[in-house]
Image (cartoon, rainbow, N blue to C red; front, side, top):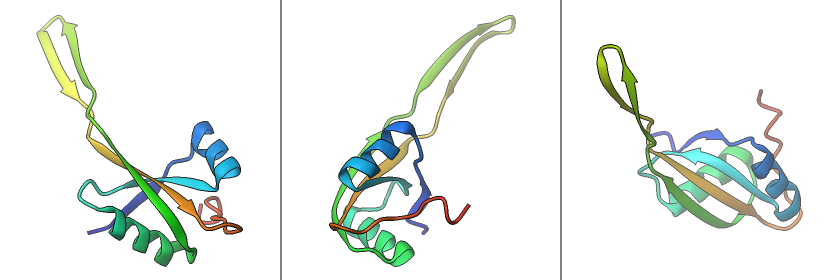
Length: 96
């Protein structure tokens, strides 16, 4: 089971990483905070102080087409906001 799926690189996440030393990741929906902390420490070689998680529900849509109603939804996602120890950083753009 892969814990870390991908880092979240948005304006809000970048501002949070510069101001508060917090980095956002999309993680496996079944991972807990302890597993997320160990995965980030192993992948990036940093020490993690705090992990906060968010379960994002799927977004449901209904479309009216010529053939009738079409229902669809996005996938449920779990996000983790990881706060690092003072003075440590993660270079997310180095692996691209």
